[in-house]
Length: 353
Image (cartoon, rainbow, N blue to C red; front, top):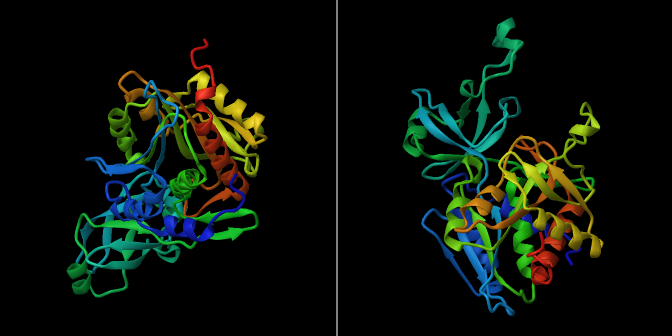
């Protein structure tokens, strides 16, 4: 059982850039960690990192796929103007009001720190003051002469966010915890495991934030019998939200997904994960997410005969904002539930109706 968060490893995972379609740096960092923990690993054509741990009691060749996406929301440079300011497009979903003055890293010929700029309030009309700044009104200021910017940066270069990871009370707070906290959890699961009954495919997927693209390819290639996605979910346990809209709550444990806008989770997987959590006294709660989806959908649908699929979700505040927040105890619960579930998956009666 995981009892302590490895803050240094998590910080490294969170800090390593990897926006959708450009995950090479974070993939290479993950490979450093998992190499001694698995029997084999490979990268498919779209960029998913697929690791394999062979089962010890598997005459029928059963496969279990567990996936966490390694991409983070970010941007791509679309234009460099004559003053050296950068315009950009989003890679993934952003709430525009949260990015004012946010520090970013532009990955040009070298990494350059910049600031998300927009018109200051002193220069805004009354109408402009009364509305939220639109995403296309922002620009990136690198603090360099235009000639130097144009030498170092071109359209197509990617942009990631720059934030420090820190503890705030019992909470981990930083950027890109969606979904790097689950990448961390998947690595910790591999460290905790001794033997698995069925062949385990621990997959670090790409391009989830732009449409679950990596999970579709990985599930089609692996063709799992069982699937568990790891992702974050909304914790609306904040002022101004009624109890029926909370989805999940911080500190109440890992969430067993029942539903999101892309998936009706398999009732057998829901029952299995819930039973395992209760039997092993692992803190848990349920999740019904009205809007938003995860890699669960890709795993469930893209296996050649479909997969018995579900998800373990991590409650999060301030999702897709400048900094995101998760409870350290929920992270431990996710790792412990996942490890126990993968270890005992052959003990459940999956044929029951």
